[in-house]
Image (cartoon, rainbow, N blue to C red; front, top):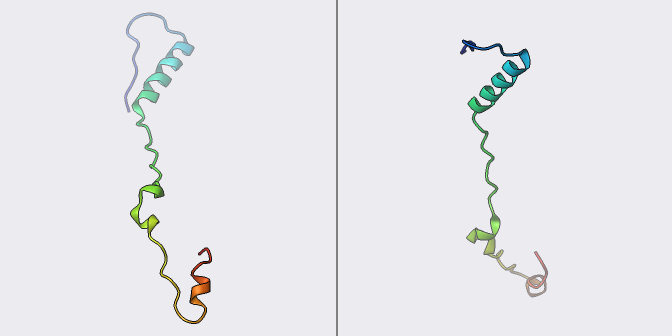
Length: 65
């Protein structure tokens, strides 16, 4: 912990508080926001599901999956 010492002048409590807040806010590193992955660039997103096989497969192959 660091100490603040006023060498010259007559600072009011409000001025000291403002200085401490300004210095403290500058010392805290910013939190990184995780980047959201965008699916439209993912090549696996474009791959289709395997076609069904067996009885009635032709009918179900045209239905949305």
